[in-house]
Image 1 (cartoon, helix red, strand yellow):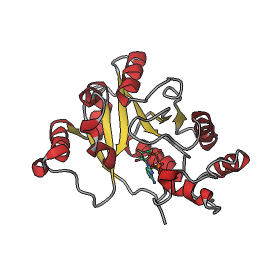
Image 2: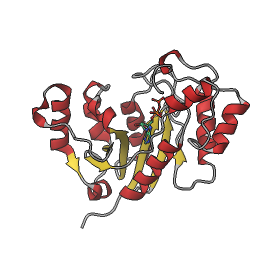
Image 3: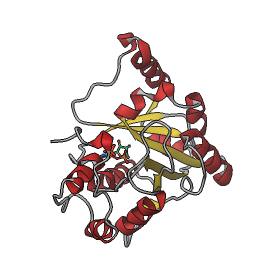
Amino acid sequence: MNKELHTIALFGGTFDPVHFGHLRMALELRQALGFDEMRLVPSHQPHHRQTPGVSAEHRRQMLALALEGCNELQLDERELDRPGPTFTVDTLEALRGELGDEVSISFCMGLDSLLTLPSWHRWERLLQLAHLVVVTRPGWKLPQRDSGGAHGEVADILARHGGKKADIHAESRGRLVVREQTLLPISATHIRHLIGSGQSPRFLLPAAVLQYIEDNQLYRQVAAGDESSDD
Ligand code: ATP
C-alpha cells in the first residue's frame, strides 16, 4: 500500500478584500479533500488582471485579521515578499524547492481559471510541480474534447491528468482533481462597489476586516473597472 503523504493546498487570489466566499471555499476544500494544510496566498501583482484596489500591505493585514484564531487556514505571504508579477509556476517552484519531493502540493482554482490555463506562463510545468484542484459549481459542465480551441485543450489535460482525492494523498503532483462545491454568492468587486457607493457590506466579510476597512478608509473610490460590474 502507498504511504500517505503530507498534503498542502494553496488557494491564491487578490483578496481585495478577503470575504466569506473565499474563507468558506478554502475551509470546505480542506475538509472535503482532507488536506493537512490549507494556505491562502495573496498575490502581489497578478499579471492577468488589473491592479488591485488597495496596497499589498492592506490586503495582507485584512487576511491576517480574517484568519485570527482560525487553526484550519494559514496565511502564506511568499508572493507579497517577491517583487514583480506573480506567476503561479514560480510560487510552486519555490515551494517545491523548499519542501522537497515527498510532500503532496495542490494548487486550487475555480473552473473559470482552469479554462484560461493554456494561456498561463509555463502552464505545462504546473502539473510537474503540483496537483491542480478545480472547483466547479453544481450543474456546471466541464469542457469536452470536441469543443475545440482552449476548451478542447483543457479537456485533453483533464483526460490525461484526471484523478481523485486518494491520488492527492498517495502522489506528490501531476493530477487534476475536480470538486463540485456550492459557492457563496459574494465577490470582492461587489463589496468594493457597495463601499464606494456609501452602502454597507456587513455580513459579507468578517467584522474585523470591515472594521479595518473603515479605520483605513479603504475602497471609498469605486475603481473604474468596478462600476458596471454589479447591481
Ligand atoms: P474580484 O471580484 O475582485 O475579482 P474575487 O472575490 O473573485 O475578486 P479573488 O481574490 O479574485 O476574489 O479570488 C480568489 C479566489 O477565490 C479565486 O480562485 C476565485 O475563484 C475564488 N472566489 C472568489 N469568490 C468566491 C466565492 N464567492 N466563493 C468561492 N470562491 C471564490
